[in-house]
Image (cartoon, rainbow, N blue to C red; front, side):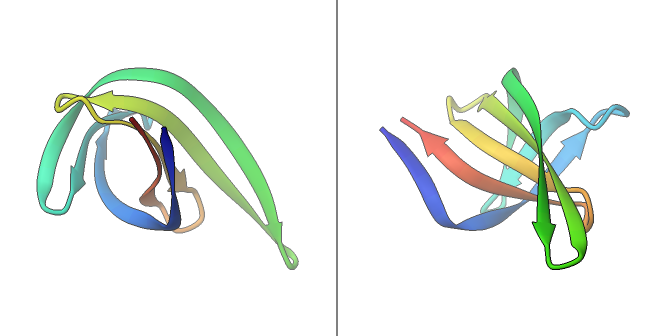
Length: 84
């Protein structure tokens, strides 16, 4: 079962120099990213402004499989979907 979050949850993410996530911190608890299943980019248009989100489907050291993304405009990271 997949849980799509109604409102994406902001995360703190540590990345390597290429922008690939290495660690995520959620609710004050850090987890190491152990696998990246998929990466994709989604351009969105909001009024006259184009937004870009870089998505990653990852597995963490605690077994969490989820979709996270970085909003390129704000440089903030979010959790958008959790897989069971």
